[in-house]
Length: 451
Ligand code: PHE
Image (cartoon, rainbow, N blue to C red; front, side, top):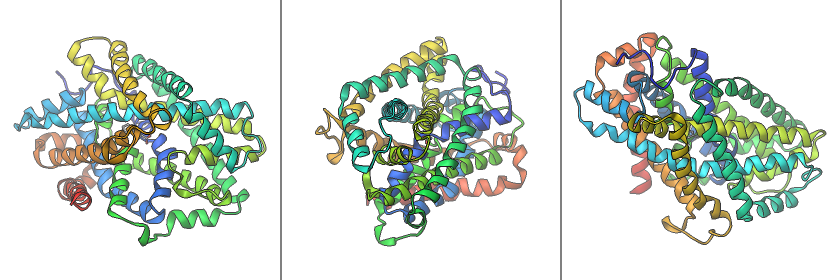
């Protein structure tokens, strides 16, 4: 088969690939997960560790994943199989594809639950339920909502249905137009909220201090693992999502440049979210270590108090939900593309199959905040915590490490040279980092955590 197009479809331009990949990267990870993890892990040091992981480990692996995807032009599982074969090396490397698909299922399962929360907040906001709200009430509403298993599952189901619908429509249609308009809109609304935090909370400086001044006492090797996991999660890295998207990328686009752009976009959204949320935390006597509810408790306070907050708040959660959808479809893509190749079914059938399985697993996470809160798996963690921990802190970095090792050491030189033809200036640096720095970085963090 010719190597210039994918049978699944193609992005119509370089810009569209960037938008789609940025759409995958920017999501709940930036707005919901990054702030609460920073809050739980002492702020500044965590942010620093996260940034180091993003640029030293994340960007080179991001480039590697795009490269592998574009060279393979198929689902990650089959791309890896073919590339290993072409490079004359073991079919073991297919494991990257399989592990990735598994991680995708696990992440999608809880991702859809949290995205469901975000969707329900559109209605909460629009209905005026949060007008004039304070910290107590915002916490109470959040607690009551997540305790209501039926409604959580309802929203979770709705979100999954939308994801399936969009994924079923395929790469070009629907998706491209969605990201084209919604990502910029999200950015504008985030900026607006940063201004609000800076001007109206009176605690902007405290928020910035928390985010940017390293307090080494609060740092542990566990925080390091969490920071690395977050770097992978937020860049959609280590599980084949970017590899799958890379398969639909036009040939004449620079890979390293694109990877850097995506990482910069993604990181700025995360930092902006932190700059919005922490001033609100301090202004309202909340705890940074609030956990997964952090965004859902702080933002309603801000929207509840600002003029027009009812509308802006609803709009904000609309955009967060869209950001989540542009990520969730990419979580599905490796598995969907594989099902389509393997079973020769339509995309629609593939998406329904994958979505239903992930939805079912997601019930465990939906119940982790209510009827299943006492059910624990891995060392006292709820089902949700276990899924999140295993996928983000273990499977993604492990997958990323294997991707770096494969692309750096085993992939045929000719393929690397072809793919990096547009990246001459950076390709040697990329090689060195991908061969040595990125795999060692992941390994060191693993060893520090588990020994
Ligand atoms: N990067 C997405 C986010 O930050 C989540 C994601 C992870 C998407 C892995 C695809 C693959 O929300």
